[in-house]
Length: 287
Image 1: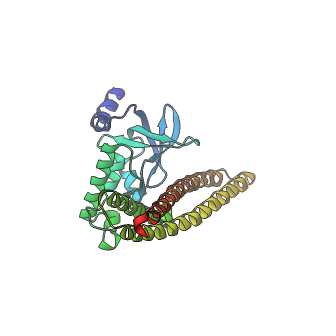
Image 2: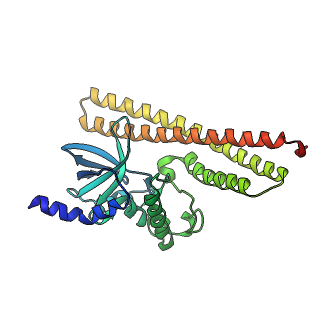
Image 3: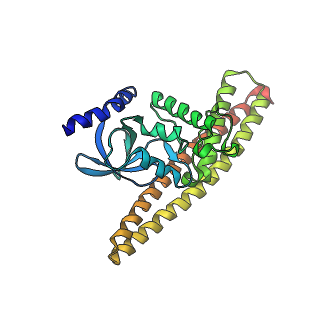
C-alpha cells in the first residue's frame, strides 16, 4: 500500500521528468534542506547532498524557507543527475509530485539562473520560469532595481552573495561578448570599427579576469580557513562544529572550483579577442 501511494505521488512528476529525456532517474526521500539550493536526500539507504543544478538561491534566507515549503521532510523525489563532483556531491534536476523543483524555485523568484543547462528543454523551462518571476516582481525581482534589463533579456543573473562580484560581471560580459562575436561574424563591418569594438571588449574582459583572480584567491583562502576550523573542532571533540565546518568547507571549495572554471573561460575569451585584434591589424587594407 505504501509503495502504491509512493508511485501515485510521483506520477505527475515523472511525466514532467520524461519531457526532459532523462536517461535514468534516482528515487529518493528528502531528509533535510541545507540552504536555498542544497538538499539532503536519502538515496538507496545513503544520505546524499544534492544541489539544484545550474541555479543559485537569491540573497537572504527566504530561498531556504521556500525550498522547505516545496520539499518538507519525507517528500518522495526523483533526481535526474546532471553531474557529480569527485567529492561525491551530486548536482541534478529534482522532481516532486508537482514537477521540477529547480523550475519552481525560479518561478517564485527564489533562485536565479547561474549557468545555461546543457539540456535545451530544461534551459527553456528555466528561462521561461525566471521571466515569469521578473514580470510578476516575485522574490528577488521585487522592485525595478533588481533587474539587469527587460524581462525578455536572456542574460544570466547569478546571486552576488553566492558567487562573488567577479562571476556576476562575467555573466554580463560573457553574454555581451557572445553577441559581439556573432554580430561581427555575420555583418560586414569596417576593420577600424571592428577593431574599436574588440578593443573595448578586451578591456572589459581583462577587468573581469582580474576580478575573478581576486575572487578565486579569496575563495581558496576561505577553504583553508574552514578546514582549519574543522580540524580544531575535531581536536576539541565538538562534532557539531566539525560537521558544520566541513559542510562550509565543501561549499566554499565548490564555489572556488566554479570561479576557476569561469576564470579559464574568460581567459580563453581574452586570447580569442587578442587573436581577432591581431588579425585585423595585420590586414593589408587596414594600414
